[in-house]
Length: 298
Length: 297
Image (tube, rainbow over the protein chains, first blue to last red):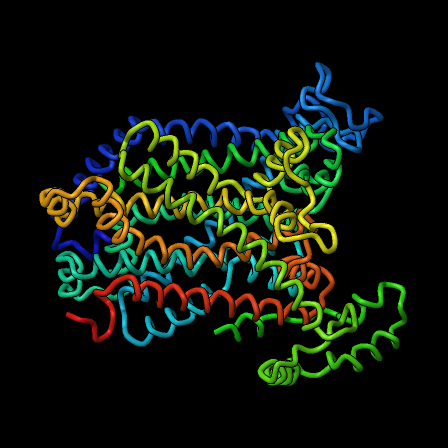
């Protein structure tokens, strides 16, 4: 805001009024969020996993990568969640497994949100040929199932965490840009945009300084919803072997390494706890998204 | 449209991949030449697209047999699995969505909505594994393998496909039920529903003739868009159950850098997706007289 005060010197009273109104609105929003049970529950669950993602193997009872002679032991007081085929403690692996999911998925979402917002702002604001061209391209990308695109591209570029982040980020860009474009179309007609145009502000300024702050609500909702989808897609791709590689304690990887042991119904603990971990995380993220959506919609 | 994606497939060293790390440099070069993968990308691409249009999908680099011989049966298998999944999920979620829409904010509504939303968010292989443990191994109600023994009848085949389709059902149910619920609520609140009640129709008549007929429109649209998800889901589920479908073919081709197979598989999947969207549009206009071109109005 401070950088723009020179430009908008003639509009001092406005510039002083707008932030305070925005601040009140924001405070009201936070108050509503804190009353939303869905939002709070989601945050507790996700907060738990963020804690373990940061703590990682430093706080787990055992080293998640350490192999012992206690192979495929059922859950007991020594190993609460049992051990896997290499004698590794599953409780430690499940806790430390939060790290990879909670790095890859948020980074991919961040790329998608940044690129998608930029594209959505440009296409929504300018319309015309730029909009037509980019929107047709977006339609083309959306014409194929996301996983199929991701698998094709990962095959061509090779599997690694970094590639996975970029692939998911780029594949998720079109849907984000579509949402942002629709929101911008609504904002463009409003008085404040026309006022800025009459003031002679340049297009990038209007898009990023005037419009962007006003559509942050829908963008934040879109980001949480996308994060849920990103975890879903990344889990699937990692399960197929296109993401994190062994011996990482990643949840999907644990499941794909161990599900063949299920045949007889013994060794259920090698996969079930990782399943529960993924399930709680995605449900937590979706609860947050639902809570935000309700507040933003009002 | 699909051209973009297939064109983006940049081959790695295919000869090296198939002949293995111990093959000599010259053998790899000979193989690449024979397979035609040493030519410029654009030539390969034009070549491939023109033969595709003539119905020739090329030869699998991995299995050395025509791609169509392998893709055909796999495609049929996937259709079977998808059909079972849709046959379960469509009625189930329409009933679920209608019930929760009609009893808005009741306990039933809460239970249906929360279960739906949660299952939708959980990756399909996670639910699949829990279902395998529960119904397949602990309770022993359903076969754990997806492939029925050779020559078994339709019922046995369906029975084998139940477990893999449950996971897909779990993901799809939430989406479809949510849309149905929203549109049921909308039509319950609409004026025409009130009119229908006021002219003395029973609740049953109102629901079946007025509410459902109007609220199923968006549902049909959403079912068709879910075909796209379903194909992605098949990739994961077929791998999990080692079921010879198009998803497993695409997966295997991707892992082995079998480009002719991968490209044909992806293109086929894209075509199916486009057809599904088209069918949805047609159904939509059949069911909704308002957008029928040259309608009675």
